[in-house]
Every structure is written in C-alpha cells, then in structure tokens.
Length: 421
Image 1 (cartoon, rainbow, N blue to C red):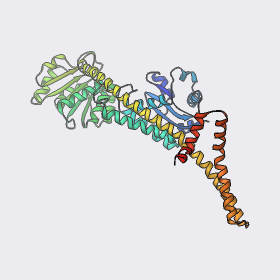
Image 2 (cartoon, rainbow, N blue to C red):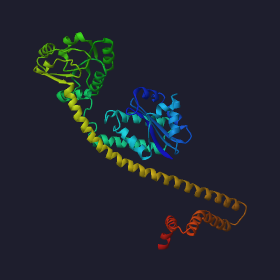
Image 3 (tube, rainbow, N blue to C red):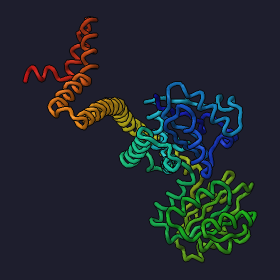
Image 4 (cartoon, rainbow, N blue to C red):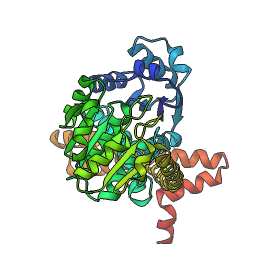
C-alpha cells in the first residue's frame, strides 16, 4: 500500500479550473465517503479551499490514475482538464507536502495561517465520514503539530506581506491598541475589504465606509458593524477619524490638503494617520506636509512588504528543516506499523491454534479420556504446531546455504540466548 497526495492549486490551475473541481463544505463529508468507497482505498481525506483542492489517500499501489478519474467523474468533467494541472506525491513526498501545506509554506501568501484551519476542517470532515484510519489520522495530527512548531519557532507569520496588512500593522505601531481607534475607509473594493478584516481582527469597533456607490458601502459596513457614507460626506466626518485608509479607482485625489487641514483644526491638532493605497493617488501629496498628519503611500508600504517577504523566506527555510525532521520520524513510525500488523497476524494464528487444540482436549476430557493423556497430547500437538513453520524455515535456509538468513531466524527464535543462558 502507499500514501498518496494529489491535487491542483494556485500555481498549477486558474481560478476557473479550481472552481470546477472544488468541494463545498456541504458536500465534503459525502465526497470523502464516496472517495473511500473506491476499491483499494482504505483511508481518505479531502482539503478544499479557494486556492487548492487536494486528495489524500492510504490505498493500494498503482491507484493514482483511478483516483484522478474518480475526481473528474465526481464533478462531471473530462479527466484531461485535471491532467493538465495535476500534481502527485507518494509516501514520504506526500507526508512532506501535507506538512508544508499545513505550515503555510505552500500558500499563495507565504506563511498565511488560514490554511491550518482549513486542513483541520478536512480532518474533521474525514472523521465525520469515518474515512480516517491509523495512518491518515496520525499523518494529519503530525501535520498540525509541525505547523504549530513552525509558527512558534520561526518568524514565518511575524511580518506583513500584503499592503492591506502592512497598513493595519502601521496603524497598530503608531496608536498601539486599536480597539478605541476610529477608522474611515474610503472605497469598498478587495483591498479595503481586506483592510477591514484585519482591523476587525485587531479589535477596531468604530468603522465608517465611504464609497461612490452607497449599496456597496452598506454591504461592507454591515459586515463589520460600521456605517456607510457617500464620498460627499467625507469632509464633514473626517474630523472624527483617527485613521483614514483609502483605495479607490478615482482618477483624481478625493482627499485634499484643505479638507485634512480643517479636520485637524477641529480635532484640536490630535494626530491623524492617512494611508493611501490607491494608484493614482486618492490623497494629495501635500497632506504629508501638515503638522499632525502622517501620510503613507502604497510605495512606502510596498518597501516594507518586500523586506518582510525576504524575512518570511528566511523563516520558511527554518520551517523546512523542522518539517524534514518530522518526515523522518513519520517514516520510522510507518515502518513500525508494518511490524505491528505482522505481530497481530502472528498472534492471531497462535491463538487460533491454541483454541482449536484446547477445544479438542476438552472434548476428549468429556468423552472420558484420562486427564494425563489429554494434557500430554495437548502439549505435544501445540508444540508441533507452533514450531512447524520456524522449523521448515530453518531447514530451507540450511539446505540453501543461506547462513545470514539462518542466523537471523536463530536470533528471532532466541536460540543464541538459550545457548548462552
């Protein structure tokens, strides 16, 4: 049998392809159960996110192509669509891949923490589907452990690697705790949405969203318990903002020097942080010349992001070494499992022999055969049955001149220990 990991991700497939082959949270349990129903699949789990869908299996050798065909058929798609962007790992490589995924080392944003929660959701769904056995259960648990170590023992998640996150980190650096800060967001696109999410994670509770189209501003404001404004309301509300973050597609600046100067006067010179993430600019450059106004542009933040990406790459190298140690440990554990299976089979054979002969002995006792004769016969037959296979193996090894094998069998049977004792 073998461990398989195969799938597609943001590196190998476009969004349109990823959408077609993904598994929704509502279908994940049933899909995992259907996957495990394939002949030769003993254990199964599916990780499915917006950036990747991956299938993990403990299955008979040579099943990878069949499993890819199942995946395509499940979604009613031609297998060629998958084959063009599919990657596959087996055994140690599959172990390493899951550990890298869970640790954020294979993510679109290096070191992002969300993937660990998504891997845990895949594990929970597989448990609910009853498709986890000893091997995959252990593998996922080890992946969670290594991800925790990578995050705690390296700086993989310590630095901002998006301008949205960098903007919020900058605000936190200037104001300390943000739970009492009042924030004005200008725009309602993806960047501002991501900024709002990071602000909410930092405990910000007072957010207003100003946008050209009010319905979109309302939608975003409602998600974060904020208030929606039109762009024309910005001047009258700016004095109430400690932090202004803007990202629109406007061709000309929306926030001018006079507007900010008036707001600062109303604030009695309390400092204001303004972050302009737009290109072209949303905030006039001269705003940065005002006392108590601290203006940062996307170029300022991009420099921070580039430094932080380099820092994360160094941390990722440290994480790879931690993962390498875990892969070796898991490989050793997996080899031990084959011994466990052999021991279990050997014990079962011995117990079946014992039970068979004991049942025959009890019948002889009940039919009036003397206890001494019954015991002697039981001891004789049990001994002969138990030593039959080892004796045959010793004979075959001796006749073939296989001295190494002969010595190995002697060692297993403990004959040298008996002689020396």
